[in-house]
Image (tube, rainbow, N blue to C red; front, top):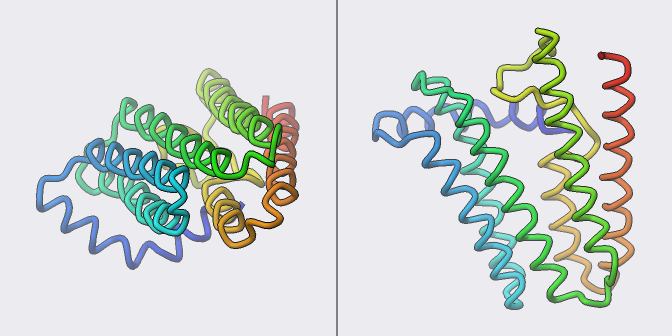
Length: 199
């Protein structure tokens, strides 16, 4: 929901870093993999009980993930495979972090499965709509990414906010998690309505 605004806000900070990485010969795919590996490691730390180490590492992983697209554009290395790799490692990282919280909060019960199904549906609706738009040779406004991500209530920024809330308020993690699951399903409904309108 606020990912685009955050990207615009961080652009002046990320641009110089991206140029340094380009001069150093770092590839966008290497950054995608690094961000994904750090994200998975974050989930492992959370599962081991080192919640704030995991959350801190998660924030670093998301900062790294925010650089790969910019690096691809300025170094003229954009590719369909890069888009594929980026979303694949992102989902692996989001899922690992969620499983980390599920491991230390078994009292949440079915909510963790409900969120994981929500992630599956949010990702499916994103990719299905992107594919359908491509077949129609349609492009969404302000879209310069290899996959046409449609705005949703639950995006990367909201996911990070949810993980921060899980860490900050462990005593009420289950209600917060159910609320987050509801946000994911609301996004699926929102995107389905958008698909009906666009297609």
